[in-house]
Image 1 (cartoon, rainbow, N blue to C red):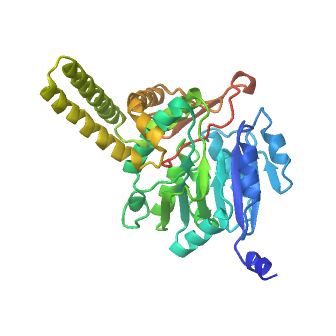
Image 2: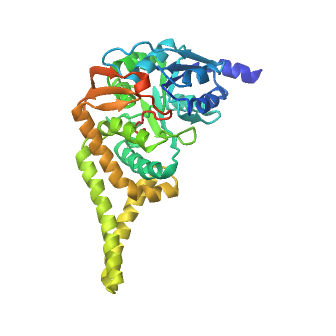
Image 3: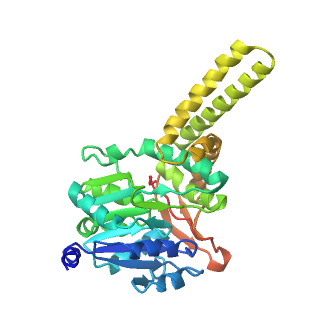
Length: 372
């Protein structure tokens, strides 16, 4: 009885899950959400025109309310439109926006609300543990998240005196008061990087935000194929980094120096020039050590960290493809095509292809500065 009274005295939290063709992962997400304890909550799934079993899976959970976002308004991204719809239906004094490909630890919701209140912040965001499988996921994801960790340092983001702002849309807990005060997702609905835009709006309003690695609370597998990985990061990368061409050239040069030095050292060793081989080999080892030190900050396994060397040129390729896509206005995401320019939100032109022409595998969700 004491435990029941304690829960009833907690603030209501509305859990909002946007879902578009997420049959591969939505079930595990909802199972982890309905199992939360020590907090009062409701779960809202916004079915954004799914053509697979997403709606059926959501409706199989009695505690889940499934809503439709309606037609996509001009100038609004699909995910933002779904989030706006979910927020409009929510009754909680706190809102948790989380993606369909996340899995939440038991008790993590209550702990995150307690952490937000203890820190006195209006918005709390976790960068989930990234689950990676297969060669390309392990090679590319650590490189990207290491760059995000360097660009959006949690200490700066969480510092009220710093202008840095970031959030990972896979886990954003925000007070209803702050969300409404800044206009919510409706105010950033033209952006394909709506999580960072929302965090910036909250921080600019004078409210505090807090951002950290949240592997103790939530995990996710963002992509389940290289095609999904490529499309997702092409959508986001140019918006996440200020100088994409410079960064692409820097990482490509790093790859060439490490591999080139190691190759030259091996050739010299075969020719019996051991002193020169050792000297050049040491250069390769030092450069590789600096790379590994940077990659380790992204919280991936050792095998993924090791493959990150191969991920360097792929990251450069994705950066340049992202820049080109925004210049040409050919950004594809979840079967929709958006037009936009580098460094700005997509334009008001949003073209939606027929679902049967663009059915996607479930599992790819937006990434964030971590998200991002």
